[in-house]
Length: 398
Image (tube, rainbow, N blue to C red):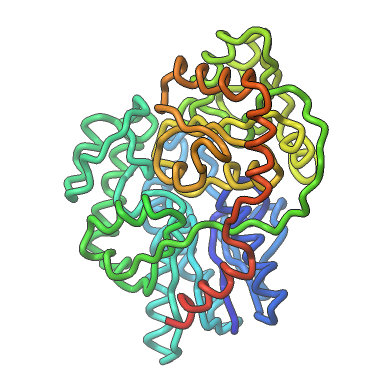
């Protein structure tokens, strides 16, 4: 089978990039041909034989400095032309879409459908939903104050503009609203054959829309099988990944201030880096990958995933447990699906620094508790590459 994987970024960056790169490895190891389509970038580690990629748009000076950008982030005609070259050269059996909004845009769905109709090929169009873009103009089901918001679920996207949901910017919120309306009425999403939801929670939200209800499939993200190892714990609490207010980093920092005798380590990137420096018992170690990140996770007494938005199926929560480190996570989105409370970790109310502090004290200072949770984590069962592959083939095959 030939699979074309589509994503904005084609190099290690975030959760969706981790997913597409590992998925490609899984598919190739089982005899499938895999190519990628996305933005042109010197960091790209994968690509396609046609050498066709979409030019990135530089927003560093703002949209006002790029007057062509507003139209292209809603409908990208060059992206349609580029993906057509890949489709004709590679002739895939499956086009597997991931994060495509605001750069590639759903215009490429229209081109995939046009190619399918004109050639008569039995092409499957599959979409993995990494966020809530299909039902929310801000993609996160939260407003500019990082408060949960579901007011657009009924299809009235004007709320996004009224409350400046997209980065507290009226212009960006206007574009988000127009994008949502345009693609809703273009019928582009009707050409998607299946929508993979990495959490049952996300599936429940998409299923509020009749147009998606018969297409959604809940399938947790996979992780590589890890050989259990005994690691000497370093006595610290860890948060790794995207460090920002919506990810709850500031809530964890508030809890850290209440536990001055405990060391807190932060690895990753994001706007909260400057806030970490202001807390005496917190240390920022930069962006880590590979064996450095693995070691950092293994040696942590506990990792914290304090997100304040409806997370989907965060790799960080799964990775931590696979390496034998329990997780304290917020009761948000798909996070509770991944943590066995009282066995592999604890849950707390998002944004509640006091409850988070209490959970940390319980796990850190109750004799033997962290060790018991750690052993339970090593036995935790998640989707493996093999189990995920079998279920994915059913989706690909229809």
